[in-house]
Image (cartoon, rainbow over all chains, first blue to last red; front, side, top):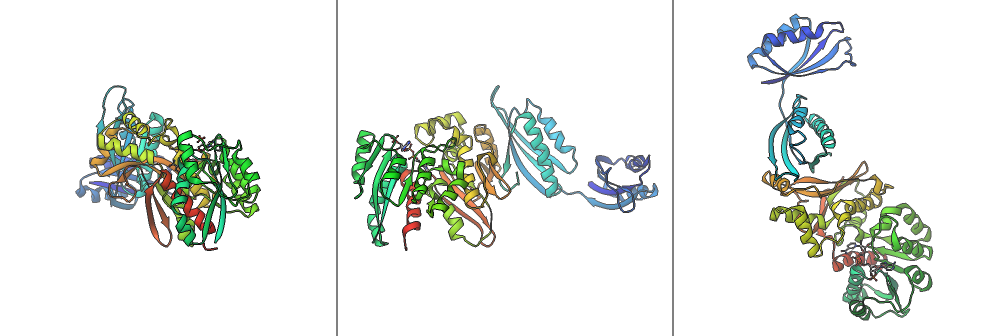
Length: 167
Length: 332
Ligand SMILES: NC(=O)c1ccc[n+]([C@@H]2O[C@H](COP(=O)([O-])OP(=O)(O)OC[C@H]3O[C@@H](n4cnc5c(N)ncnc54)[C@H](OP(=O)(O)O)[C@@H]3O)[C@@H](O)[C@H]2O)c1
C-alpha cells in the first residue's frame, strides 16, 4: 500500500537519519522525500513529506517508532491516484529515451506512468506513443505535465494533451 | 424602401459568392425594406462601375469567361474615393504580413465615412485597434463575421445574441483544411503527406498550405476573437502556435482506440491565446468531422454554447456577409 506521511523535523543535524531509520527497519520502500528546506512551521520545525510503499499492518508501528525518535507525525494517509489522463507524444520517442521520460515522472512519487503504447513505423519516421499518467490530485497532475512538457521541449517531441487540461 | 449602395472589392470565390447571394436574395431584401445596389465591382485588374447599379449577372459571366471584370483601370481605393456609396464589401486576399490591399481599402473607406463588411482576416489581425478607432472616428459600421468560421456565427453570436453574459473562453476548430486532413488520416490510416496531397487535389488545401497546417490561420482567427469578443489588444505575436504537420496516423489510431480523436484546437480567453493539436473525446461536441468548423463558448450564465458549420465556401461565407449587411441596414 502506498502511504503519504507528513512529518516535522527539528532544525538540527541528524534528524533525517532518525526519520529514515524506522522505514528501513520495517522494510518500507521510500518513494519520495519532499524536504521543504526553506519552510518552517510555527514550532520552528522543518516540514517533510514522505511517500512510501509498505504493508498496511506496519503503518502503526512505523508511526510509533518515528515518534519514539522525537519526530512529529502530522498526518498519515493512503495515497490514491484520483486523476488520470492520456497524452500523445510524437517524435523520436524511443531514440531519445522513452524510459528517461517515464522515470522523470515516476520519481515524483505523486504521479506515475501506468500505461504505454508505442508505435515505430520505421527508421527515419516519427514514432508515436500514447501514455497514461495517474496522479494523486489535480495539482500533481499539472506538475507531472510540466515535467513532461520540459522533457518534450528538450527532446523535440510534440505533446498532444486532452482538451480539458489547461495546457 | 431604403437603398444601400455598395462596392464589392475583390471578385474571387467570395466576391462572386456575395454577388450570387445578392441576386438570390433580392426579394427577401425588398421584403425587409432594403434595396442593395452594387455600384462597383473590383478585381486585381480594375473595376466595373455604374452609379445606377452594375449588372451582377453580367459581371459574374464576364469574370467566368474573360477572367476579369475590369473595364476601367481603377483600384479599390480609387473607387472608394471617387464613387458615391455607403458600404464597402471587402473580399480581397488575406495578407497577414502587410495587410494587403484590404488594409488600404478599409482605411480609405473609413476616411470617406463608409461602412465596411469583410471576410478578410489580414487587416484585422494586424491593426485591429487602429481600424476600430478609424471606424469609430468616422462613425462607420465595421462588421467581420465572415472572417472567423465562414458561415458559422460566432462574433455576432457572442457579442449580440449572448450579450450580458460574461464569456470565459472560446475553444474550437476554426480551420476546415486541418480538420479534413486529420479526419481523413484516421479514416484511411494514411500519412499526413498523402492526405495533404489529396486535399490539394480536391481544392480543400491551397497550393501553399503553410498557413493552414501550421496553425497560423487558426491563430489569426483567435486574434480577431480575442479583440472583438474579449476586448484585448492582441496581435499574432501573442498566440502560442503548434500545427498538425507532425501528427502521425499511428498517433490518431492509438488515440482512437482510447476513445479520442486528435483535432487542431484554437483556444482564447483573457489569459491566453493558444493553438495546438489536442485529444478530444469521440462524443465531445467539438469532435466534428470533415471540413466542418465548430466553436464552444463558455459563458457565465448560459453554460457552454456550441455552434458548428461550414468554415469556407463562397455561398456559405457570403451568408455571413449578408447577415452583417442586414444587421447594419435592416430595421432602421
Ligand atoms: N474562400 C473561402 O472560403 C473564405 C472563407 C472565409 C474568408 N475568406 C477570405 O475572403 C477573402 C477572399 O477570399 P477568396 O477565396 O474569394 O479569394 P480569391 O478567390 O483569391 O479572390 C480574391 C479576389 O481579390 C482580387 N484582388 C487581389 N488583389 C486585389 C487588389 N489589389 N485590389 C482589388 N482586388 C484584388 C482578386 O482579383 P483577380 O480575380 O483579378 O485575381 C480576386 O478577385 C480572403 O481574405 C479570404 O481569406 C475566404
